[in-house]
Length: 154
Ligand code: ZN
Image (cartoon, rainbow, N blue to C red; front, side, top):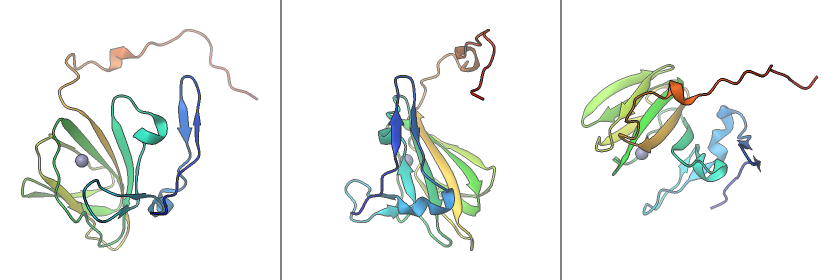
C-alpha cells in the first residue's frame, strides 16, 4: 500500500491537517480490516488529529462507484453529510436518494451501504460517535463565550 499522508501540525490545544481539495481525495486510501481491498478517496481524521470523542472521515466516491459491502456498528451511530453530487444510501433494505445538503443519521444496528449512481463524483463526510452519550441533549451550553475583544494579526 502506497499511502499518502497529509502534513499535520499538532499544538497544545489544537491540531491542523491540510488534506487538499476534495476533488483530489482519491489520493487517500483506506484498507478495511479483514477485507482484501482498499477504498480510494476515504481519509479518517481520528488518527491524524487525535480525536478523542468521535471519528470523522472525508470521502469521495467516483461516478458509478459504491461501497462493495454492507456494514453496521456495535456502539457508534453515524451521520452522513452529503456535500456535493448525487447518490443513494440503503439502510435495512430502505433506499434513500441523497444529494448536496442531505444528512442521514444511522443507529448502530442499521445495516448500511451506499452508492453513487450519477455521472459526477459524490462528496460526503461521515461522523461516527458513541450512541446515547448526550444525556442532557444540550451541547450549546457547553460553549463558554469569553469577553475579551477579538484580535487578528495584521
Ligand atoms: Zn460505519
